[in-house]
Length: 260
Image 1 (cartoon, one colour):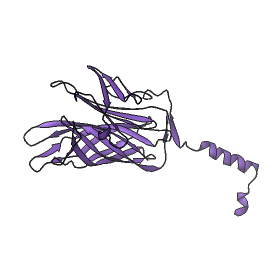
Image 2 (cartoon, helix red, strand yellow; image 1 turned 120 degrees about the horizontal axis):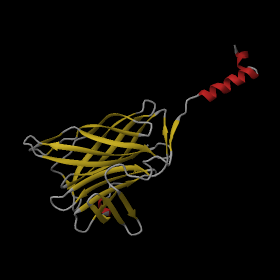
Image 3 (cartoon, helix red, strand yellow; image 1 turned 45 degrees about the horizontal axis):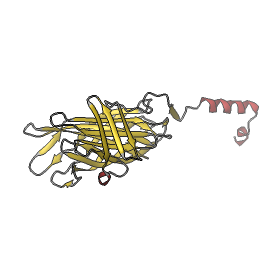
């Protein structure tokens, strides 16, 4: 039997044919993809100038300029606000993706925007499974929300699921921790990853229990994409509507940036 492994020229040709027939291990998402350099969502444009520490954001009915709020940064995700505290934003920028969460506006005209996109071409793996870990940031009408994101990605099955843990609320103006209203884990349900590296799904959990009222979120949703040179980044956004037993409600919007 061992002698058959030495083969002859015909055997070599068969071996080459097998190599040529192998399935690819990645999908290239080129720089011409519509998501490259663009934010997927309802924000027209957003730019950050690190030299002057100024952030500008443009959307329908919105043209705002914000400054850095260094003490409120959530690890690698930057925080911006304007001097009147009418506009607040989080900006996460990876090596190949970015995510933006905005909340603000004058009384009676508050707007919430979340958006994400790629900043460079990406290679989407087609084999193996990995765990992405990173940060979550967001807003309610009166609070900031921070947490940790964990995503289980099975590239071979093209699926993604995960959770947002260690969720806390902080007051918007000074970033003080809200110890009265703890947040529970928000679960990100199983979703399919498309050939373009995008995904979307539904959330569960995430209740707020303050000892008096149990806020039960309605089913929320999340969306995002895989990016980075080796598919090693995931950026996305989350929207959850919280409702209490008396009919009161408020919205939580957020975004995440994670790597493996």
